[in-house]
Image 1 (cartoon, protein in one colour):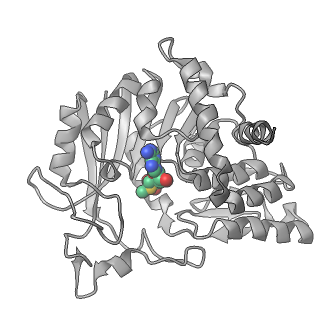
Image 2: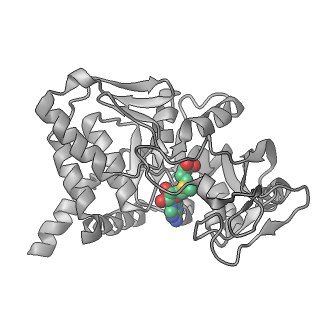
Length: 336
Ligand SMILES: C[S@@+](CC[C@H](N)C(=O)[O-])C[C@H]1O[C@@H](n2cnc3c(N)ncnc32)[C@H](O)[C@@H]1O
């Protein structure tokens, strides 16, 4: 009985009725399989390790729809204004926002509270946006969408619908609280991983694959899957951590890299371009390749963490603390 009750709660969390994005799937998508997977993944939300986030969502629900508007303001996603809440509600807001410390992606301004996150996601967006031209009316996948910062930016630029692929429940909760404050029906948050993208055949006009490839053991296999999920003239936007150099090589660290675990392949820009070419993309435009700076990734009041600066060699910032070449970021857009 308890199990039935729990599953009902899980279904409620991710609105497990058939999602609105089913309308955008091609005929060859297996809708039944997708729905079964959604129901299965939703159970992860009930893991007791995420009770703190689930409790924060319960508090956020008491502030449902309180935001008078949402917009992009000074590069931050602004949800509501300070005057939308009374003093008691502001106290509840504080509890909710504190639950998601450290804030890794932002900036946000939520009911007047400015959240300066560890990563200045606006810097990344402002690199990508000019290279994209328009995304007006597009159906988009944002792979590894974290708390959803880029999805708001995409909707603000006129995207028809954005599906965020993000298997980490805490990030789902973080996004869901914001959807409580101000529902944005053009955004769907799903607990799928990048490895499930080929279950969406010929669905997307644009797929954003930012900060993903170097965290996986088979980046070329994933690129192939993403190609399958693009419409015939669709495009793939890649931001990938890598290393400097002109040879087509990639670095596999023996363990941690710049303090991070789960880093497998760090390509030069040339190697990344060859991955994309060999995955079968017809054209590509590489538009940025520079060292990652601590303007873009740093500790803040909302992210009391060790950050890039702590993981570079203090005597030689071109090296990580482990002695590897320091991180670069490579960006390109490829056509299916
Ligand atoms: C380095 S962050 C990048 C976040 C964001 N895309 C950006 O560019 O700032 C990687 C994100 O991928 C998520 N992630 C982890 N495993 C994943 C998987 N199998 N498929 C898709 N995303 C995954 C992480 O939870 C995290 O939000």
